[in-house]
Image (tube, rainbow, N blue to C red; front, side):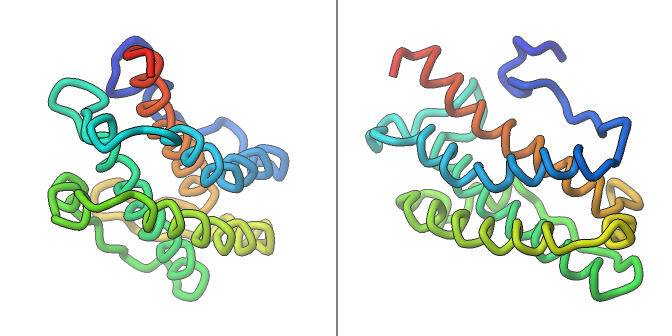
Length: 175
């Protein structure tokens, strides 16, 4: 896939080569800024625009916003499980099926509020973690063993990835 591929507007996820406090601080900063950036990406969009897919056969902007709330809530729970259990096996979920559930067609404000509160707590948790905490992790049935440093990097990318879906669509359609 190239960067021109609308599925991957910032490229596919690549784990960082280094897991340093500086790299993690930059990732945490992206997570801190996500609520504001996501809200800015959707500000002023009409219901018709919110119901526009970001690509052919892709999710609508509305579904993307709800997906971010769902996905980041799952990630937050995974962080907490890994910090309180010894390499737990987490449960994946069918993201596409969740995006088709009726609540993913509702107004986006509740998800924007959820993301803001969730990220406030997530960032506080991440900033309190030690070096050893970032080496803890969980077993993902599809991805294998993941450290919390790797999960942080994944969700930093995920934040930028889905925001770019929306901002690229706005740019492409002149919204």
